[in-house]
Image (cartoon, rainbow, N blue to C red; front, side, top):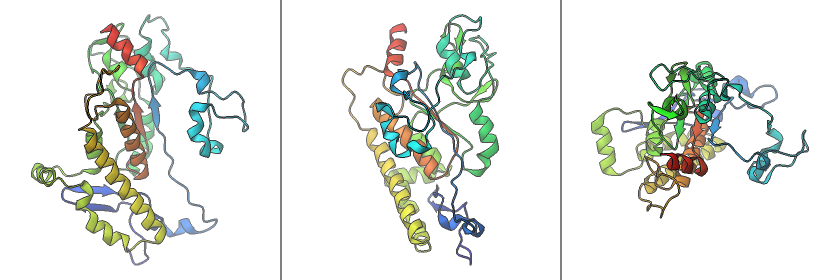
Length: 318
């Protein structure tokens, strides 16, 4: 906290082997940002969501163009932000098509989605496709956040072998590519994603001690949070309280998810990590993505998960 009443954008709440990044508060803004019109601009962010096996597009596509369109029923949750929404249709990724390479649509679709490149058809080590747009963006804005990008999903998948008609499993498993030959592996365990976002401690002894005490990660930073709370304005106090509450609630849900009973006769394979319920797994991952945005931990997250139809097809062909 400086004499001018400002606090650093890099301020974190610290505890036992733990550091929790804060959401962007008014007290972190440069004084000059309050001049002029007084408008406060949020950082530019971009998230990529991918679901294999496609969508039934009539349920996603407005029937009218321009500003007077009505949202399809499946998009009604976006009604409050409709005026800020652009629904783009009629787009296609040409390099997701065979272009002489024969079958393998699913691997090509994922590999070309963000790279805009035709993947080399191989199931060996000589994979090649292209740098994905998220990594291009991460190189530009990644230094402004704790994580340049965040890759998460609900199905780990294989990283090698033949997964789709001669295409490497790397193509059908990864959406993000750091280079034309190096994919960015995703994390599928919500608990590990949470640890990655909020735990900077590498000391195994401290980590074990924290686990034995069975205390929330926030318990170690509450004293620091209370001290900061007293120095903030009323608006920032509410924002900080909301943020800390959401972190604690999410951590509680992750812990509870590990104890969920198995779904009777599931029609999709159980995720390799927690939780055991696939729908809850998806919801947790979306919440983690939103939490990463809320804390400005990253501005370029990616999330992908399989539809039940795609999973059923994979199981039937195994």
